[in-house]
Image 1 (cartoon, rainbow over the protein chains, first blue to last red):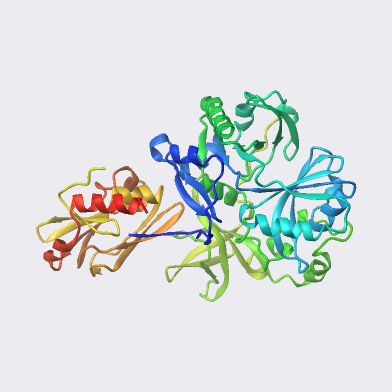
Image 2 (cartoon, rainbow over the protein chains, first blue to last red):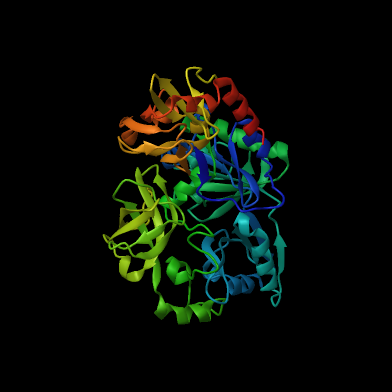
Length: 387
Length: 129
């Protein structure tokens, strides 16, 4: 038996570690190199974890993730808004203080530098959360393309231990540890409060699991990070909390059709192809990528489609998509068994004419065309909670 | 983990348990542990010819795809159909979950495979890399 991880790690000269690394290892997590970071992919079956259990905990209870490898950029000053507007495709002028939005940094061609969450922390202060694998590239891009504005740009990527508390019981878990009234924090809003005795902690109701949840930003000393991690696990016990690794993070975000850089979005894929139109505000003032996107709008040839396998087989990242006659028409960007939906699902770029719901296609798996059909996305949508 | 002594092992983490001129083949507990939740097992048909060292099937976890390598040459006489619907049985009991049975072409091929204690040592060394 020889094993191939379906999301290959990129070669990196130095393996970086989050402040929770020792905690993960102590818990017996299976570690992988993820974009140069030594990160847990899943926790051991012996303590009740494993990708499927971790995934299910987030859908039905609560799971916590170390996401300290994510990067952070702070823009502050009289022209911080103008700077953010110039480099991102969503309309940051619509953000109230304490509100956040999904957005993306674009190249002039209308393709992706990265996707980001933009938080407005105060009148002239914005906080961008970016991907681990693109930290340096993103920071340089932001700094270089905001020089004309009167604002400071700081790379705060190493300043926080970031923990995500995700799932319908995330709110109950975190509420036990903070004085902030979380019931008043809406999805994609932030607040500050004391968490585990630490004052003035940034608490955002955000995540990457297609579930309700929070992300907290705490100081990076190892002892504090470990203490908070363990206190959350303790507080969440009554809700069935489990620690979750990158494996579950990937299957959760895939069920929710949340893009992953290097897969659904990249420097060769534009906004229209990725289907992120609703986060791209063409009516706002000039921003990098807009002129190219205006031109590209009438010329979209491929789109990101959701596939569900209708024959026995699992589509994986990079597999070819074939039409019913066996002709190659596209490729899978992400594919996996979906633990909550109990189906084998995939996202794939295919020509528009093959992207209609119900279209029967094939995915080439080890030389064989295996049946799949186009289905509506997101595959999973969390139930709306009665207020 | 104590690996059963009634069988031989490969460096690709398969086990083969001989019974006269036939043998059962599966993957080791170490293999299931490193794969994680197993969700798919693809096996050859009865009558298929296996060549020692060549792939004969695939096992997939949520995260990974792995080829299965034949520990010995022979003809498939039986497949464990249970694993098509309950692949997680391999996680629960890897050494009790045979995948295929074959009639051995040359039982002597097993002599060159790892013993239980050799495999144990091999896994310990591999784990240290």
